[in-house]
Length: 384
Length: 200
Image (tube, rainbow over all chains, first blue to last red; front, side, top):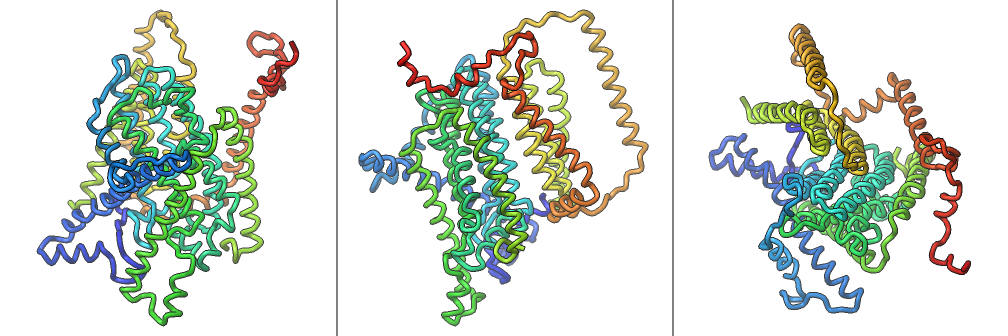
């Protein structure tokens, strides 16, 4: 892994505009050996992505408050900053200075470890999220499979915190979370498999590139409409968003596995769930909505304007449009998820498991079979 | 020594010490829940060793299958069957422990002997890295087709078994007590409870 972990942050296709290379040149010009320059470069993209994820969480929390207020005909936060944009900061600060309570009869070691185990896999999964051709931490060959594998660690953290709290509601919440998570992982993986089959690669960059041959019309949502719906439902269930928020159902379980948590440990759960929501939306936009692709191919625009697509200015412009498009699509999906949360009732646990095992799983299998058949019948449209 | 080799060495030492101490913990710790969580840690560290060997697909599969499925299932079983039961003291526990310890030590000695006497081909074949996924797929569908198909038949059998056990209307007697199962359980669960108040 360490030898293959190629950390490239900004480098537009086929050219020398590579931030890593220019960073190395800058430091070597100052008289540092290249190995030291490489070491100094290593943490930079990771820190940048971590910061982006945290800012994304702040924006999402603000959106959640504002949209929920609009759905319930309230005003929502309005005093903390203009339109209440500082409210998430205030929330975070409040959680930061709250007393960190560990219940006397709880298992303090597992109680502390639980929230950490929930958060780490989610943050690690950002490794494979591309914002442009080379705008990602690592283009690992197993790409999207890494995310599926990492997201299967999360239930262990939930079970751990549910067990360690020594509270019946926590235990029930933890068990529900794990049951939900493992049963929705299977249709999710099958939906991803259909996309992977069309693009002949597990790498997220290849999946996006395969969708950007003809702009809007080559996006996977038109070739995989059923897969898109399955993936979106399963992603909502994995994030424990409201139609499927049984693990923390307030009316039944107080707050599920979070019941005994306070202060920063509670904030870790909170952070984990929002980072996971943004990550899921990003992955939906990468797998089905063309990732960083603009509805009209950039090459088409540059050619009609008589510009070379390899000119540095055009490339910087294209990279900027790519980032904006990714963020725009992601936040559109986040908006949909928030609207769904505040307008739909919660399903029962038996309905949830019925939906997962008796409906989504067979549909996902049929979708996979259909994709394989279409790929053989129409190799041009479905990836030869 | 370059940065990458020293990082690799440090990672290897950390991972292997975690594996050995974690595995000892799984066996020796009295609390079964701790053992199960430690087992998850051991599986994760094994995945880390695969990563060090440049086998990222195998590492991800290890995490998905062993941590995400096997270990979660073990934890589920432990937490659902949470009986507070006083275990009876077993006769001759010390002698039993002594003999099982002897067997384990013997196995360890055997492994050490194999390790020392075998002529290991170092360095091994070059790691193929990123194209490993494709290569595994090719092998599965050509020269390893029979084991692959046999595994799928095994999984199908397990799935049908689970369905039969879950649908209790197929089995007419209770397996342990040999009583007949009331057949209206399944029918009742589909009746609408809230509207069924007109009978009285």
